Image (cartoon, rainbow, N blue to C red):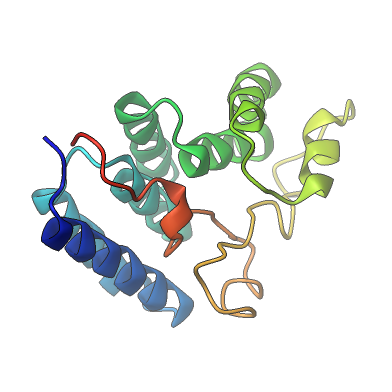
Length: 170
């Protein structure tokens, strides 16, 4: 069923609040809000993407990957989740083939991103797990400049209304 205007506004507010908690370094609170939002919106890919982003910040790698995979299963064209999982696969799991598949799917969507990442994704040399990109995850347009930009974990989707928040079927 489609989201009515009230539910859509509730979803947007929750996404913005989660982004603000992340920007303030209140990761545990952001995690709580993700869990609460998923109880109300369990079939919204952007909420699963944001849970993945928060779990990644908490160092809960397997749970982050699972959340991104859930987001992609709910919406195979969810750009933020495709992007995040591709970066995770390439630079943390070192699975070039899986990363390439997700990144190519992401590119077909026409979403904007840091083009230097494409070069890093295509590098042939072995990248060790200690050589993680400082800005591998893109800055979310929904966040003020300088909030997550100082972290290693810039993630699209957090607070970004363009990441899939439109009236569509739930």
